[in-house]
Structure formats: structure tokens, C-alpha cells
Amino acid sequence: MPAQSMDEIVSLCKRRGFIFPGSDIYGGLQGTYDYGPLGVELKNNLKAAWWKANVYERDDMEGLDASILTHKLVLRHSGHEATFADPLVDCKNCNSRWRADHIGGECPNCGSTDLTEPRPFNMMFKTVVGPIEDEESYAYLRPETAQGIFVNFKNILDSTSRRLPFGIAQIGKAFRNEITPRNFIFRVREFEQMEIEFFVKPGTDEEWHQRWVEARLAWWREQGLSSDNLVPYRVPTADLSHYSKATVDIQYRFPHGLEELEGVANRTDFDLGSHSKAQSELGISAKVMENEDSTAKLAIQDAESGKWIVPFVIEPSTGVDRGVLAVLSEAFTKEKLDSGEERIVLKLKPHLSPIKVAVIPLARNKPEITEKAKAIKKELQSAGFGRVFYEDTGNIGKAYRRHDEVGTPFCVTVDYETVGKSDKPELTDTVTVRDRDSMKQERLHTGELAQYVQERLK
Ligand code: GAP
Image (cartoon, rainbow, N blue to C red; front, side):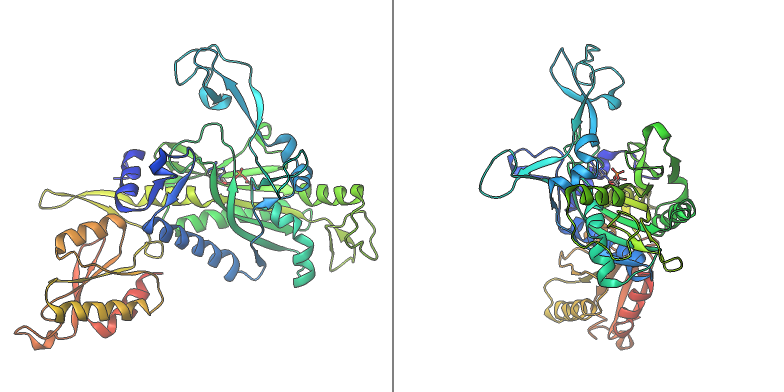
């Protein structure tokens, strides 16, 4: 049974330390969330899986970590100052404000249909840079990580000698002053994106677009999302972003409905082209290329023809927070046990689980058992596959319940037999390993543990 409601996920996240409302003790700051001890692990694991698949396991990708504070000219020439806006309406009855395309003509607060005409509301956060606050001393918090990639296109080309096709990948924060943040971490004002700008020869863009849609669907399935819950959707021309020739959204069946998890856009040469044009117009000739037969500066020399071309760009772009919400929703399971009890279990893919192994001493007050459990914890931790947790609650049933709920794939129990204090000396140095999903237990030698876990984390 999948998660019945967002409420169940929100409650689990708070109870077990995944996600808390931002600025909580002062009543919260709308549209912000903080990731707690388990949330930060889950989020880091999702980002690591993305980086591994898209940077380490490909031979046509470079990484980047650009700054969040962005020059206003970058976002002017990218088109964001003029067009990165949502339609805002006011309710004339209760004065609340809404995104026009989210409410269907009726105020969700008071039900009135007496609304103002929609007007564009720019979603970028402005901030003052430096000690003087005047008209000109502002910059933006980036609304997408993509622009950091475009402005570094030449730097990366010059320092890596890449040829087309190749991509630049980046994970980082983005900020949008959403009119109505909602649905937990689905729509927030501060979030993280995982973005690729993949540069290709014009004319090969449509084929690469299709390839990236398929690659991204396959990656989400590897994170545990089922094919039934992943729905590609071709965005109608009228709804395309200002830079896009074609976009396929990868939609996911979230608890609140089918919505965008990732967008895969064909951004053409829009961004490199408009930044190049701006460079020429502003007379910024950082480095005018020799043999140049166009005015473009953000260009690459074609290996065959020797001509300078502005590449087209395919952009798979997803939100880390939406990814976290999707894998949590998919993994959240309620099961009826034979005993009649209900258990909540988070069936996360083991590589995403915040805790990989919980090591549990059967008795809390027996130093030979607790010392052995600590030694096993230390040894497993040094195997390098992620967090191993020493779980000293003293109640094995409670420990299993807690680790089922947070998705720990393996619980290792250290008992009297492990330390040779039983009538079964042959079991000395063995432990029980309990599998989260099947709840089956098996006895393993401590020397086999690291490999056993390692093999099951893939
Ligand atoms: N560079 C392209 C771009 O930013 P987008 O469709 O506006 O495109 C890409 O955003 C992804 O970023 C979305 O698919 C979504 O996963 C995530 N995202 C966008 N706005 C968000 C918000 N307010 N809260 C959480 N995630 C968001």
C-alpha cells in the first residue's frame, strides 16, 4: 500500500528526524524546510547517486559548483528579469494573494470569485551586495543553477578541451519567491537542483533530447520509483518556458497528484546565443576568438569543419527536494503482520537509506556484549559504505520498529552467543542479521558482515 496521504509522510519525517519546517521555533518561515539527521543522509545519498551516474560513469561530462549570488546582467540577458514571472491575483474580499493558474477563479481562502486581473510577479529574490544600498548595488539569488553553467561555458572549454557532444553537471541551491509554496517540500522557496546542460551540434538536438528523456526515466527507476508512477508529458507549445523549443516533463504520482519531478528541455542556442550577443553589444571582449567567422564568443570550434558554432543544449533538470519526496512516497509502506500488528516500513533502495546498518547489543548492561557491538560498528563504519548506527535502546523490538520506519536495510544483533557466553561455542563471533523487507534473520560470521552488506547496497 503506498502512502495514503501527504500527512503520513510529513508526520514520519518530523517524528524520525528527516525534515522539519524552517525557522520552526519562531513559527516557521513559509516555503523553507530543514533536513534533520536522517534527511541530510537521504538527500546526500540521492545527490551522490545522481553525480555518480551522470559524471563518474559517463565520459562526456564535467562537474561545476558555481556561485549562488548572480550578477544582474546574467539574469537580464538570460531573459529572467523580463519573463521569470507567475500570474498573481488578489482576492478583493479577503485580500489574500494567489497564483492565478492554481486556483481556477475562486479564492481558496474565502471562496469569493471577486479577484483582480492577473499580473506578472517576478519570482527572483534580490539582495544587496556590499555596504552601499543604492539602485545599482543589487544581485540575485539564482533562480536556476543553469545560468552558472552557461557563464562558465568558455572557462570549462578552455580548461578541458572538450569537443561536442559534452555536458556540464551541477548540484546546488536555487531560490524562487513562489506565490504559494505548498505540498510540503514539493514547492518551496529555497530548494536544490540537479542540472545538466548537455551541448550538442545543432541538428542532433532532437535525437539527444529523446535519449536524455529515456536515460533520466531509467535513473529514476533505479532510485526505486516504479514505472507506473512515472509519466512522461510533452509540454504544450503555449506552456513552454521562454528558452525552450520542446520540453518533456517527467511527472511522478506524488501523494497530492501527478506533477512534475523533472523537466528535460531542448533549450536550443538560446542562452549561449543571448549571452554572446550581450557580450558583443556591451563591448565585453574577454577574448575575441581568432579565425572567428561569427560574432559569437560562447562558441566551440567544430572538429570536422573548423567552423565556430554555438551548440544547442539539452537540459535535464530536477529538484533534489522533489526527488526526496518521490522516493519517500514510493518507499512508505504499511504492512499487516501475522500477529495482527501494523508495521510502517520505508522500503528505500539500500543505497539511498540514511542508515545502512544498525548494530544492536541484545543487553545494554553487559559490557562484553556492548563492547563487542561497538567494535563491530566501528569495523563496519570503516568499510566506507555510509552510516552505521550503534543502537543502544535495550529493547530489540523497539529498535527493529524504529529502523523499519527509517528504512535501515540491515539490523545486526550482538548476543550472548556472539561473545561465547552460551552453550553453543560454535556460534562465537557470529551475529544475527535481519533483513528489513522480508524480516528474515540469518546468522553470519562477523568477518563476513562487511561484504554481505556491501553486495546488497548496489
Ligand atoms: N533550469 C531549468 C529549470 O529550472 P524548472 O522546470 O523551472 O526548470 C526544474 O525547474 C526542476 O526544479 C523542477 O522539475 C523541479 O523538480 C524543481 N523545482 C522547480 N521549482 C521548484 C520549487 N519551487 N520547489 C521545489 N522544487 C522546484
